[in-house]
Length: 54
Ligand SMILES: [Zn+2]
Image (cartoon, rainbow, N blue to C red):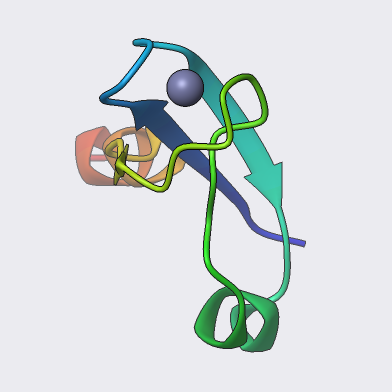
């Protein structure tokens, strides 16, 4: 199952969410600490790792 890393712009908390693509589409991501919806998705380490593969 894919994981998504987010950072909360309100309290700077970084958190990881595990959810399916469908869940990501249908539900709004909020900060687990302050419940703010001002969250930004971080670049996945999985993608970074894949890109470095030579
Ligand atoms: Zn927060």
